[in-house]
Length: 437
Ligand SMILES: Cc1ncc(COP(=O)(O)O)c(C=O)c1O
Image (cartoon, rainbow, N blue to C red; front, side, top):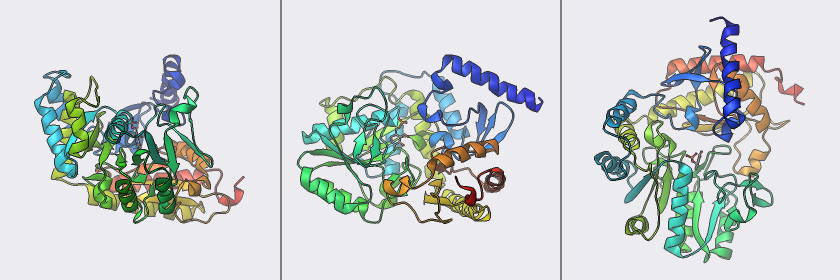
């Protein structure tokens, strides 16, 4: 296949996709990404229809934590699926998946599986309201909890507002929004509204905007304030679960929530989510007092994928290797930023970190942003353009800045990725920063 024949394959697919899929993509987060069409993924790499390989630090927005097509997961699912896919009833793998989940995460008593993080968050909020008899909800600026009307939010200095056309403004009326990492502001919200708050939900590391880690003590303060005011504490572990540690952010930070929501890394790439928590809360689903339903919940494939993934994670915990790879990758990126005089800001944890350009005038290695205010200074738009340039050089990352490291990224990927980023920075017409417009 010549280069022009290869490019023609992509162009033809793009035309076909745009004819039948709005914008040519099936999730709006992909609208800003380059229109690459992938043919296959294996371990830490992807291959497009033109035959190019990519070192993948997007991991499908997080799920491919064991790498693409992990043999244990694919074989377990393939074996299970031959006996049927959805029974609308209980089955052996479902019980095994729940047992393994509780064994891995340790603090929850009970778990219910779902299909997406968005829907499991809804279950958690409903359960908290049912248990407390209260209506209001508290969250943090910049945190993401799904795409449906009652949680999707844009954050400006004036507070949270609808983020899309078609979203009724009053869908967000029950929310109180506090700044992340600000214990004093949090205490004030609780002191003003403590009696009304059913639940407080938090991304224990703010991954969706900037991989901002919780300040020491912030999550512990949140835990005590929620307890003191009778509010249910929900950890949204859709990104952090099974990625920061087997027990997720709760284990990593040593703070235990009342309920938590998981997804992404839980099932080796299969669409599975989970809502887990304390028995006295979760039992309300069991009595039928609180509805939680779903045709595909704990399907045979999902349960098989959970069991296989959690077996792999428990038998050979990848966390030290992920931390080592992420640490060296971050150091390599920072060195390349200095080499090319580009003000790269890198923050977060080695397993999931955020890369962005500092604003005009900022120095290389500018310190971490603590909250959304810090992030607004950053040139995220320029970074999104850079992510497209990286794709052209064989590094696949999210346009919003998050980089995910998998259990199977190795030396070859580290070396390839850094060489490719080096080449992309050299090709970036806007470096060095003196030419910043
Ligand atoms: C923290 C967090 N919560 C909830 C969700 C929603 O999960 P899903 O996309 O599976 O609906 C996401 C998705 O990225 C997320 O990052």
